[in-house]
Image (cartoon, rainbow, N blue to C red; front, side, top):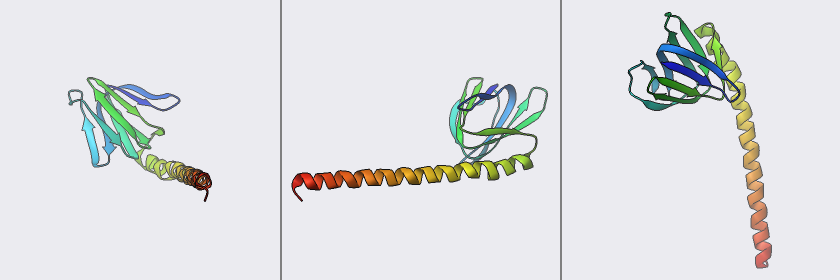
Length: 132
């Protein structure tokens, strides 16, 4: 299978894999070359693949989408890191990806306040238009 892990700014992995293991919301699943085509939403966790030489490569993935179509396996994610071992990658998931979540929560909160303020102003304008 041809595995590609795509980030917004680069192709992190472009390799031939004999097996891919990833994590979706309902748990881990494995893909072999003759596996049926499908799409899966990946959760924050570990993605691993085995090369033709038998080497296992592991990545930390911060959510994403996996598409298997024929012999191609494409993973699209905002953040991923190739790591030397599972313990190190677990640390990356907890430390680095948690920081991203905190930033995302703050951004969403700011956006919610902005939307609420905009709606409030529209309601005030509507009241004035009605003469209230």
